[in-house]
Image 1 (cartoon, rainbow, N blue to C red):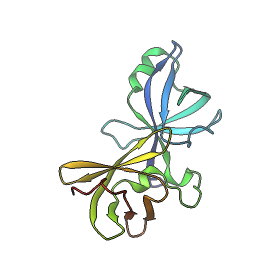
Image 2 (cartoon, rainbow, N blue to C red):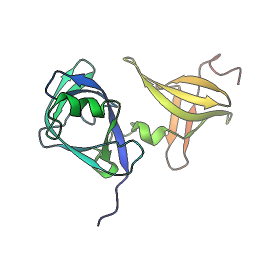
Image 3 (cartoon, rainbow, N blue to C red):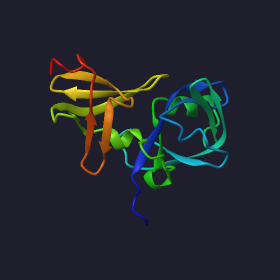
Length: 175
């Protein structure tokens, strides 16, 4: 038996779509957008490390979401049972990113410091907006929002586990 690959969340199933088992899915980035019939992903199981394989039979964009039909989900009851779960891909099957781009899972948990070495906190989540991402950094009992734009995010060092930022005046002065 082959060892389990690290499975990375790439989308969340947000609701059913229609009566034939289609699902409306919120993608985390563009990883699934290129999915074609026969493309395989896995269903995130609640409280389990098992793998439920799902095969895309059709996929289309609808606004910022995807509408996906899976071979294994053919009716409304089956579709309703998976709402709220995440779709996963093995880490090694993710397409490479351009230099200076990162998958969200690579950034979560990294330490965030200023160019002067002042600790800002730990990267907890990322808010996707039409203009740019916003990093949610936890500092003690509060959250700091850092715009993920050039000039503010100076460096990401995955090896050291550190994101260096140069925040505009007033953004983190009260830390």
